[in-house]
Length: 259
Length: 287
Image (cartoon, rainbow over all chains, first blue to last red; front, side, top):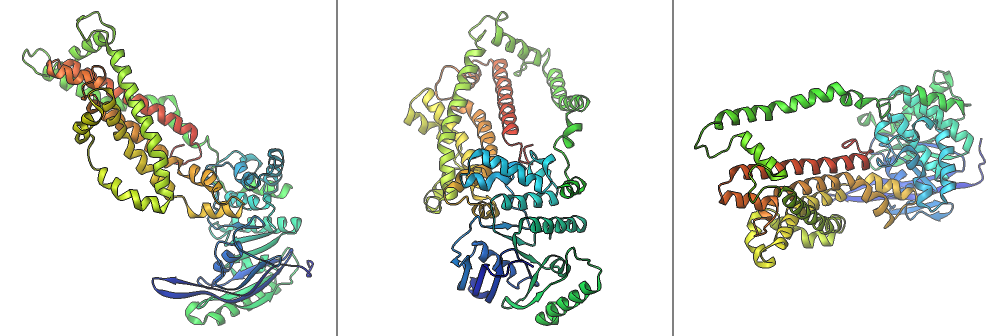
């Protein structure tokens, strides 16, 4: 449904090993992934499958010990504003208001004050937090905090948004609402999203493509293309077929012990 | 974009508005009750003190009424008209200047040092063990050495007060800058704030509450050690009159000095706390 020609992100044979108490641990092995501009890609798998490691390598927080991670054909050497990260625990700056948090990126990158102000207002409106513009993070609900975290990376011109189980800490109602909002923002802004989750339903509801990962060592096992029209009905028969297929894949990759 | 607007206002708000929570704790009746509750214990102490000392000729401790009169005389004169009458402002000012002067010196030394020890591994390894050994040495133990190094008089007093305020500020600053959530560094760097800019935009604001606690404790300690500081042969100061009145067996003046130090220390702590609440509105532990 989006332009398939230009890959924005490309991982080739990416692996990550580290030592923990003298033991060599292989967190990720031979991961290959191409994400095209405007795509919504989910990474799904049980804990220890390397999905967060993969995301952190793309974010530039960790370096791959093998292979190549490329953004626009250029190697990723560290964090950068074009790859915005949304953390499960929000990572908001507690000393800044909603306005200050959203303006942090543009100010840090030296944008003129007037431009920062306009950008901030635009994105506060986008996530519907006008009434809470001057509130501090500790005064907000989890859902509101995550809206701020999303607005913060969008206001900073992120070209790809990396989301690490962003709705994992929210209650079911808020979670569904934020999924809807995220899709709406994604469709309006033609963002590229790489989204880590362990919820089968969330992955099918959101993604164009789902990468199924499995642990020991962490790797990408298979890929499912979701071509259901949006908005998707979680109770529809074809949704359920995909749910069964994905569930089967997750379990067969893990073996019974991981279930 | 009506959809998100609506959903935001309909979202479950766990900690809704800033003004909602403290409404009950700032109402006049609540404050009055609190003040009454806080007055019970000192009231009881005064009554017991009065009953135990009043009208006894050879009591070494004067009754509260004598202390009150002495305090009035110390502040405004007109009762005893002796060497102590109407001298309170001189002593209070002298002590205030030493407390705040020593505190300011301690602040200037401990803050940058704490930041360096907290953030630079090499400096921590070089200095931290020494400081940990020096820290348990009480200020009183420094008194003789201070008088040799700085001589009799106010310079020794400054040094001792400074020493008392130094460690709380240092320790809390180190703690503050060391315990900045790693997540905040990641958030800052993915937003384009990297390298040394993170110090100003992440480390400093994130450690402010801890630094502030250090300032509060440091100032408190400065008041605590003022009497020791003024045992160094200075002529004025609340500590100085306490030591002098003790030698003259003017116990009511000693108690006056204690009361004034207590009140002054309390007020100065309240001022710092007030400033902290204004500056650290964002912090759940201060707001």
